[in-house]
Image 1 (tube, helix red, strand yellow):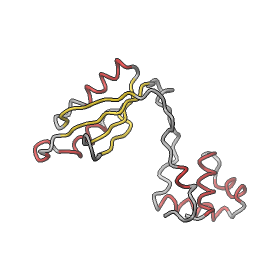
Image 2: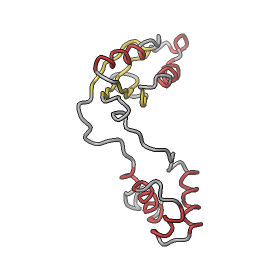
Image 3: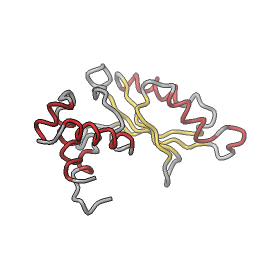
Length: 159
């Protein structure tokens, strides 16, 4: 990525509805250059989507929790991480899940309508027989929301 790519990403991050023509005007480059750069950034997987960012809180899910899941190790019988991943993907309140190292085998970020509702979500997660146990941590406040844009702003010395 060069400086133009970074400026382009920054511009679209600040104003996602800007459009290619207006972006070319603000960056003082040809419209075709902006479109070609965007296409390459999408093709390389740098830009992964154009959809709106949604707020779980505004949708009625103010409680965020992180589940550490322990998964059965006899994967032939129980399916392992892939089976658990498919199960978690079927639960709308599971926002993301990652296989991890250290204590536990997988982390899942979940949301709920209340602390009481969180128990329902945890019960849904635990319906998968490949999950041995879960421990839960409730988030009290968000200090740094999920972000990737600062990585794109790194110096040209980066990858």
